[in-house]
Image (cartoon, rainbow, N blue to C red; front, side, top):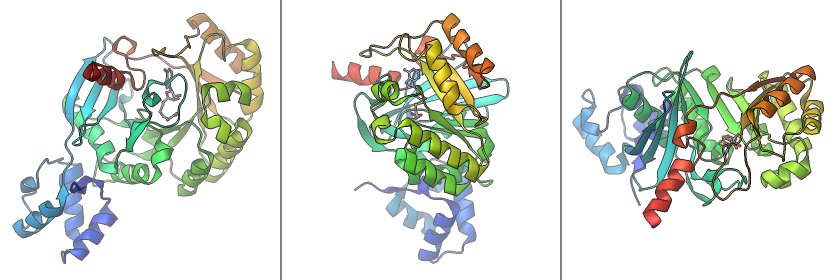
Length: 346
Ligand code: SAH
């Protein structure tokens, strides 16, 4: 058994640990700041802590370090990292530059078990979930690399965040806390393929983050072909959960809609989509699918994406076309990790 990661602990959890070790409670915040603000890589750097405590911690804990296995930079400034975890597994993290600030897209699992047909991340299944501290370390490593502050986070990298619920909740606590990176919940988006019971569980937390639903199709026949998760939680149940979420949290949902040529991009489909979500005040993000090897799907051309968007707008649904950043650096989810795995196998 490897050591536990001290980075995984929220302040209340660290406070509990200090009590167990017979230490005063204030040390919890001090140690948390060392890990999440100063971002030290070794215990000896925590210079205001008693040496005996540090020695005791080091017996049981370690501090997570990500190694950069690959780094690609796009012409538009987008940087994509392949990070190696201490156990040798790889994950992807992307930094995007927007006028309002830098955004990091973090992975929440190594691989994914949701099986969406168009997605590279899920092709080899799920290896394991990431811990809270490992997800936070993606942001820290990305900030250290670009030498600038990152103000926004999207949980849209490899993995299904709601399939790793507890660790993702701890990550959000850690990252939003004033003693840490202090990133406000309103600057965080969490994207899910639609695990209905988990959407309800998330609603209970009443977080002020933006919930994004990867909808991609307005009916069960179409959606089940693209996303096996729809067999478990069909469209009507998903939309009902979205409405409950909005009522409980007072936050509007946003829908992701990846457009696939000849599959989900007809005028009739736009009308069906509008009927489904009209009146929710939700926002739709349209994005031409990023084709991945081994998938039969190709992207809707730009003119048709535009037409689809205009029709939705006419029908009373707020829709925008997502700017594609990093398309020259295989920035679609899971592609870099898959490339690296293939190379390692040959
Ligand atoms: N599991 C979560 C978050 C990760 S995927 C989810 O499903 O929402 C982030 C977004 O990228 C999702 O909307 C997903 O459907 C979409 N996506 C995955 N592969 C894609 C591809 N090849 N082209 C376009 N969008 C893709």
